[in-house]
Image (cartoon, rainbow, N blue to C red; front, side, top):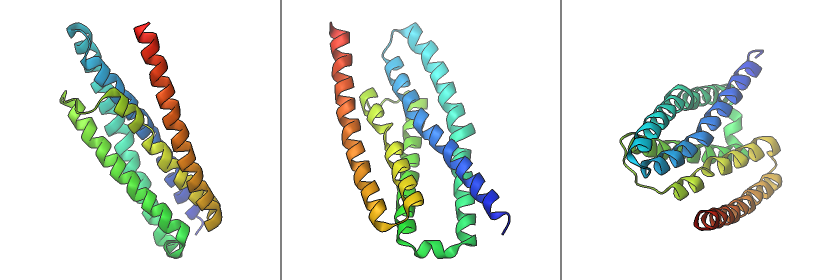
Length: 182
């Protein structure tokens, strides 16, 4: 099983690039939505460029990384099937399922914005942008700590982090509105 560490390394590399795409694409969505409401010339120039950037990020980095991360994960589980019996792995796999759902929902937003269909606000996308962060924290704590008590603390920590991010978002929004109006 000398090749096991190579498979694990490839899995981790593609998880990192998958998350990189998931972290950046909602930020591009924010810019696309805000560009949509600009004057015609700006809207056309920015819209075209942002669609191109989102398309390349989504289809050249994010989707291939998601597929390869999943492929290498399945390969690892085939090599070490006893992991699936462990509670921490079952919880981790639940978060991976949540990540896949998040990815697919993000794909829906991507397709809408590529067609200039604005169904969400830029503020919604700023909040949506944090979804992958929560999942990443949960998966890392589960994979590293493994001990049930430790990962429960980690999950509680994620909830506290979520509350802090939401409070930070509200503060940022009020500062932005104050600077825009004043």
